[in-house]
Length: 272
Ligand code: FAD
Image (cartoon, rainbow, N blue to C red; front, side, top):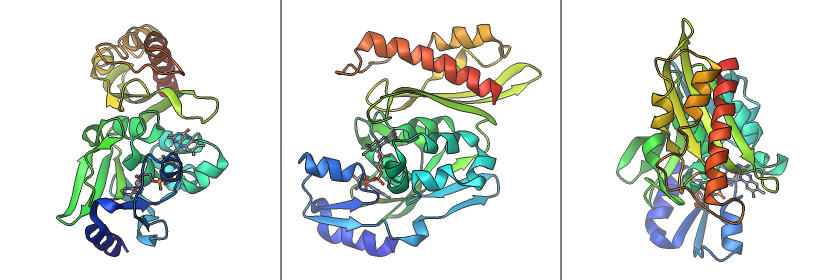
């Protein structure tokens, strides 16, 4: 149970690490980036495996696999972007074993869930010795593999309200070997009478953590839902941001790709 896992985390302190799908933790252990004395397997906790609707909010348990989410009619009816994202993570094996909770806790800058959950205005539910708390996805991801989660806490679920906007899309530049996002942009829009009345836009893969792109949002709201507006807004992507550079893509290329994939996400959202 969650309380047993919390108890074990408390008794082993820094020496313990939670294990869910193991698709990020096990590679990290193999590379000796992590060397815990105790691994606490939470993957069998049934209470963390359910998907439900509470009022206008979708709740996805932390132990739900990407495949379970991709195949859920409940999720699709709530926000199709969530299903599409889950269905395009890694390969079949990764999707059948990797979990949303593990991905959110790991906070890889190239992962898909952080970006999509920020645009969807999701909240991360956490349980720890001090009780339960909820953190907005926008505030949860703090840096390279760094989050607002404390060492003695467990993510129990992710909740997605319906308020972000029904027109949504996520577009990523697929890293061909892993299918992680070289860059990825998620968009939720509300359009009324041909005008964009609200926009929620986030970027992943661009900097050390997924973030809300307010410059793109500001370039959209109050404007006609036209190709011209989308192109102008996409030009704002990744501006004023410390853009990452690595052996896959240097800073200039990554920044340009952020603009390209922002435009693609905006156009796809409008067509949703
Ligand atoms: P684990 O590896 O078990 O754990 C990861 C970390 O989270 C550990 O530190 C663990 O202690 C912690 N943790 C786990 N569960 C919890 C919890 N409930 N509360 C608190 N802490 C917790 N990801 C993408 O986004 N897009 C991709 O295209 C993609 N491609 C991949 C391709 C390959 C070949 C591989 C191996 C991975 C890929 N991934 C991709 C990552 C994949 O989605 C992982 O499954 C995910 O990042 C981690 O989930 P997990 O359940 O495997 O977590």
